[in-house]
Amino acid sequence: TGAAPALEVTGLTYSYPDGHRALRGIDLRVAPGERVAVLGPNGAGKTTMTLHLNGVLRAEAGRIAVGGLEVADGNLKEIRRRVGLVFQDPDDQLFMPTVREDVAFGPANFGLRGAELADRVHAALDAVGMAGHADRSPLHLSGGQRKRVALATVLACRPEILVLDEPSSNLEPVARRELAEVLVDLGGTMLMVTHDLPYALQLCPRSVLIDDGTVVADGPTAELLADTDLLARHRLEL
Ligand code: ATP
Image (cartoon, rainbow, N blue to C red; front, side, top):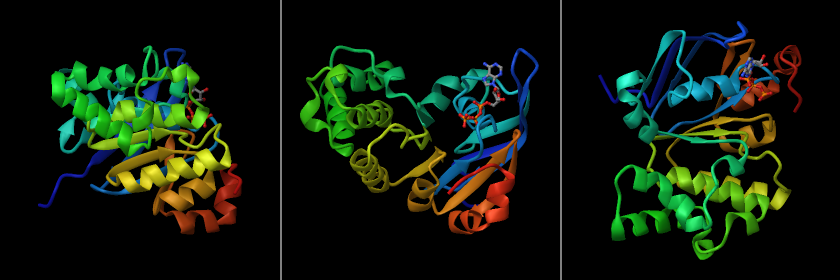
């Protein structure tokens, strides 16, 4: 009974074509409205896991459900609407001449047109504090602004869960703080891969720690980060 989990990952296993076993049975459950940080050393499998959540990679074993809908070949369009993936490098999501066109691309692909599309684009840009920049080229924006526009391209599709890969990477302190405020104000369900432990502590009440393709800890972020032995064992530095 009760609402379906926003995200449920069970026994997720994946090997890259070269045979490298990157995921060895990931289990993770996220409730609606939760913000969860995904921590772990380099090569732990964090990015590989996020690429499964919207079907970019196909699991070798295990299952993923988003709001109760199973990730499966026949469901990928709806899964991609539900799961908003924000890549580490904003340039991977910005390729049009103007900010407006970049943000319109996703919702247009999902069938929005005319005033509805324009409203959706404006709302997404407004949510990231970039409404005044719609007619600019993404190439003329600062790194922090590009990160926020890349986020808007995903928000414009109204995802049910936002999955962010290293949101604070390569940002100066001011841009880092602006992004944190935007993310908190957005509300909603978020999964955030990060090496930035203070950022995780600030934004995510709960964290999961992944190492060598499995979840090795899952609990309140403050408790995980207070466990210096745990951090040392998994090569994490506060
Ligand atoms: P980081 O914190 O450095 O981003 P990560 O936790 O996101 O690391 P992944 O990028 O998911 O880790 O990588 C998990 C493992 O899979 C690593 O050992 C990596 O070398 C390997 N891997 C990643 N991409 C490929 C690929 N295309 N082919 C083969 N192995 C890969």
